[in-house]
Image (cartoon, rainbow, N blue to C red; front, side, top):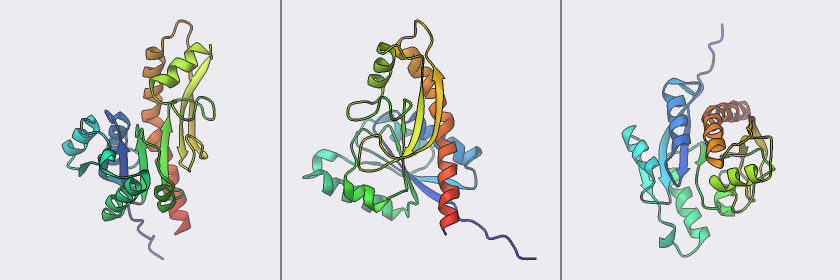
Length: 208
């Protein structure tokens, strides 16, 4: 009988700008969830020195890097630096978890088809430049929508544009404030990001 081929774990690099709650959800899924034995977060990079996600990484003995965009002449050189740092760790999949900088084409090309982002709305609605975090929930509530949700999608050269991997709906209740909606959407984000990663991992293994 032929022995089943052992599939190597995917090494994940996570880019953040803030608290990193989705980073934590991914780490937990790798440690003791649906990604256990399938993936590991091996480096976390933040563009803000005070991003709490860096501390989350350190608590799990994951290399945590502050990459200051202001120290680079332009976006392309910053993108090249990020690629270099990720390549050191042999990254197979890049996950954006509240990373607020637009990725340059040289970065997107380097990891084409292997970059995921999570967005707190049902894309293609309420996506694009300036639509992130609280701005999204304010827009949804002000528009009188009856539902919102979260989307994990593959990243391309445009804001919030690549194909969706997993999308889940969240009802907007009468009287909801943007904060109310944000809390419910965030719970769903933590559920679907690991699910989307698993889907991409399975697709990548089929190609090898």
